[in-house]
Length: 576
Figure 1 (tube, rainbow, N blue to C red):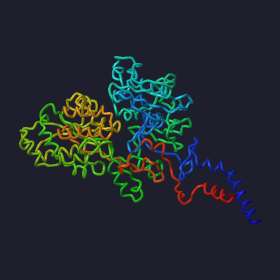
Figure 2 (figure 1 turned 60 degrees about the vertical axis):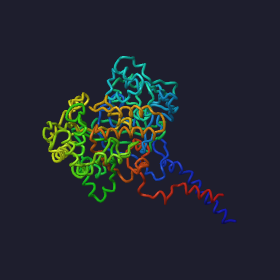
Figure 3 (figure 1 turned 180 degrees about the horizontal axis):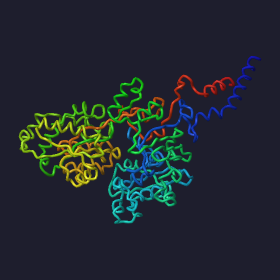
Figure 4 (figure 1 turned 180 degrees about the vertical axis):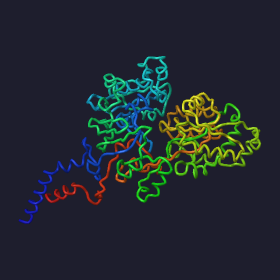
């Protein structure tokens, strides 16, 4: 009996001790804004992520995307986000659906959201945000992305007033986005819908987002310091009421100017940053040969397509046989083993592996490397052994020069060897290049396009005849139009786009060359569910990483050494 009482006394004493120390124990299980941390999380002082990015002028998405700060998507809340499977997940909107006619999308917002100054954040803020993007006085440089919204183009062109834009707040938590016709991919388009605070714009004008002192945040982090071309410090936002509160306490961005790019790999190995993007084959080679760094290397295919576009409205590329001849003359395998070794994978169509709706493997054999067939086709087109073929140059853009010069020169040599056709390579200033492309004045060019949102409507829609390519095909146009308005199951819609993509490849609207491979290093103790391979087994990068990422405690094995909950369980059993 006395032994039993002694055990109870001991258990009671330990229970009292645990209660007295519980605040300290629990404090280590939440971050600075009270978010419960995973069992294997490192202490709070370790929850600071450091990386490099090029600096910008504004921290506001709907002001500019080409002069924006890299922190924009961490400090502002969009309507929706995407995960590493390219599925939509809630952000400000907890749910969304289209009306029966497909001409309106309703976004149901979370209640109780706030700006970081405590003001309410609701559907009316998104009305202001979209109106700001369409306002011609704002001169937004990415306005074209939102032209699917009703009256957007007319507002931008000053044909209608700003308040006629097809975005309205039904109430504080319901946002309606109207379109001229059904747009099944609109929610994906609005992944890029980071909100702007009307009260900050009214108080500080266009400069509100240029310094930490006047910036207002609606996202998971808030700006606490910004020294231009030096550092941006973001702290977890205690006012954030979004779907995925941040686990990190702080994000430290070492920003730099274009003229002063830091030695990133050296900084990473010196433990000055936690992740970097590797630039160039030399740095990649160094990492692969390092016994430690090679295990911290992560490679992923970017949704950027490099391809050659031709003027199919005029000779010589108005002849399908000429286009086919050029396509058959390019040895993509050799290209990937030389100029693009380890930094590219061969492309045979517009949509990259892993892109929603993509089936790149079926296009591989449509226009394979076949120099004999290439010479035959060119001869049939009236240019036997290349005789009489006009002088043409491959245009490349100044800002793509580093990525395209060596591949362009390799392609130049392949065409010469296979077809006995001498083509030049010309580096063209960006504006001249863009104007020439948009005006269909470029005979031959090597160009890239990066996805804006993860839907075939984006990348394949680029090839509609009203766009920048001098190519038209009635079947392709019909299929794209059908896919763009099909409100049925996604897989059926993807099948429509697949048929359109096949037509694009068969008619050689472009010659698809490669998808770049992005190489990143990040510390092995940094963990995020979205950094794990997705359902296709591919590693991808997702903005969710900034919210659900955290540093693990490498000094202990969470599975073998559970936290204090084991003590509570023992005390409970001893007292029962």
